[in-house]
Amino acid sequence: MSSTVRTAPRTAPPPRPAAGPVPFVDLVAQQREVDAEVQDGLREVLAGAAFVGGPRVSRFEADYAGYVGVGHCVGVASGTDALELALRAVGVGPGDEVVLPANTFIATAEAVSRIGATPVLVDVDPDHLLIDPDAVAAAVTPRTRVLIPVHLFGQSAFVEQLVPIAERAGLAIVEDAAQSQGARRHGRAAGSTGDAAATSFYPGKNLGAAGDAGAVLTDDDATAARVRALGNHGSEERYRHDVIGMNSRLDAVQAVVLHAKLARLEGWNRARRAAAGRYAELLADVDGLRLPVAAPGNEHVWHLYPVRVPDRDRVLEHLRSAGIGVGIHYPVPVHLTGAYAHLGHAPGAFPVAEEAASSMVSLPMFPHLTEDQQVRVADALRAALEA
Ligand SMILES: Cc1ncc(COP(=O)(O)O)c(C=O)c1O
Image (cartoon, rainbow, N blue to C red; front, side, top):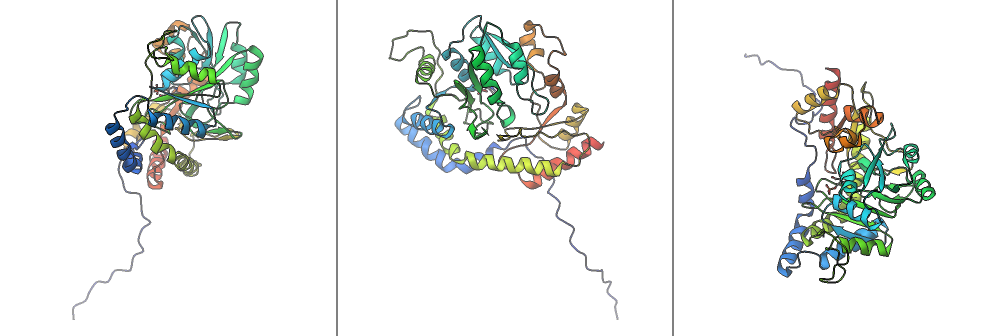
């Protein structure tokens, strides 16, 4: 009688996430969700040949103004243009000073410089890396015209502290709301608390177009009219040009994409919030890691998820070689860039921004990020920190 070798029944091992790279963002998954609607809209735009402005643009502008809770949304060609146009519309000109944080994307400063005004940089708070209201108060001079709170990484700056500083000094507030579509502070939407706000619909933003696009938001009729005229060659009436403007208008193609994505923005922001919560759980016990946190009163929309780590460049290399898509936001604070060397700030001028620039790593963050992908990111980060 032949004997058969019987092996003991085995319990299946717990499923491990499939190996493979994790992208930093997945815009293809977003497009898949809106594809049918976008294709229909594009066919309509192409058939009607209303490419710049037109009913699709007006409809999106009205919808987005309603979503933010302001009277006007003026679509423009980029977030950088939106900042420049908003600054010009509230009266900033050559020689004026504009206060903004050292830890921001360079576009915030660029817009100020492009109109001949001077960016006055200040540091950010150590816990959230948002513009520090005490530093703002100390930076105001008789030449200061405007203050730009940047709602960075997806959460609002401390507007309730900034507004009184601006009021006391007679400054306008132009919010940089490029990274904060859907964010709220004490119930008020980012982009609705200043004299005007600029937002960017760059494809990777929480509300992203299929190319460059942006908008100015304001409650003030005159500011909205000025932005619209300045972005249309300084013209309110065809071929009448009372001021020197520029060409910065929203395309109908972008309005189609933005309309479809706006309908999903709240759900996508909820998914980002859930992903941020999962990272916080997965990474809670990792030594040496500093996780991003929402300031009390903020409804964060997690445009980015920047953690702070020791020996950042080594950790970055380790994550990259494990196939994890990562970024740095931002590796060089504005004052230490070549473009702003002329401001004359030495290293050490804005220590919080500088420390953050040398220790931040932005982990993958997008609405379609799966739990398996997050486990892979967390495992790779843990291994990188323990290596
Ligand atoms: C904080 C901030 N401000 C301004 C901008 C400029 O926007 P855009 O790239 O659409 O010109 C961006 C986006 O890149 C940004 O992140």
